[in-house]
Length: 364
Image (cartoon, rainbow, N blue to C red; front, side, top):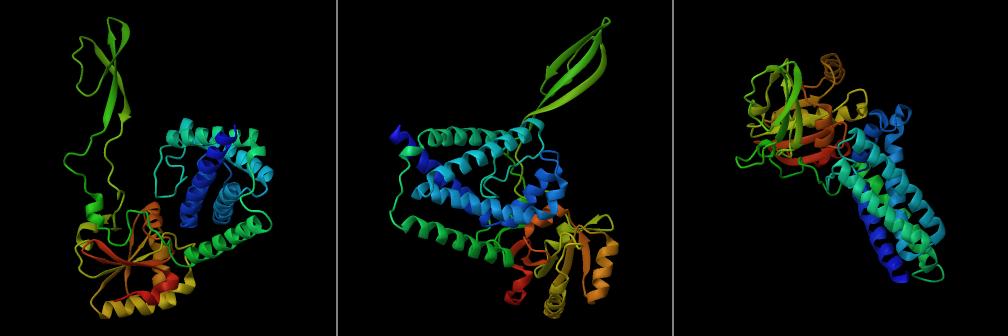
């Protein structure tokens, strides 16, 4: 039992630290995932949506802290109880989400590792088993250091997490796992290889044959049946290849300008996914930066999911010298974790990306 507890302690501790750190690197992204849980019927608690960011910060810091506390053996009883309660909650959420197909990605490892709902549930079940082992054998969890050594490590963990979280919130994630990272080409990210796997569907054809209903299942061709066709139900049994960048369009008045804009040699994109939540104080400096860009021959555009009335009001209030285009809100949230944020794009390749607090760092 002692060795089983020791192995479980290492596996659970390391996994909680890694999972927590990946989300700590991008707490804004994790808050978007929590909003899905709050609003899409998994928890059905829309009252918590405005507090999603604060909750995400607490959860990820607590997750890292529990991993560290487990590894150093600090307050073993409190640690194991906390781990057990947390994993029970996670297991319920992932099962409910998977069974009812509410949230297609749990966000357990942020954008670094994508898991399907059932993969997330399986991972949580394995963790639950390991944590139960720790719970039963918690007497074998001995402190790594004696005296104040463990306490110092725990306090240092809290301080480092707080510092790191403050940095990524006021700038951008230090490590960018998303398909819109610097150096990525948007057009290439949207392309589908010729040999990419195609989706596979089951077709349940319903016929009326001599007064009796009969169902014939195929994976494509219309069955040759001597009867009256009634209905067909389509079920996806295997997903096809999905490019890392999808649902990316830059539209204005119903026209898609993506192909043209992605050929621009000098393009500055101002991204503000929701103008109701954007930092209005940033637009003074943004006005200066975009005017300079225009003088240097840049094509400057705004990208938002807000309506034309809201974008028109923002342009007028801040005397902006560029027009706004419409792009899907989820896509904009994925492009940059800042509202507003700015990107320098050269023929579809992202060369720079900054938070509105770092506009002075743009090299135009």
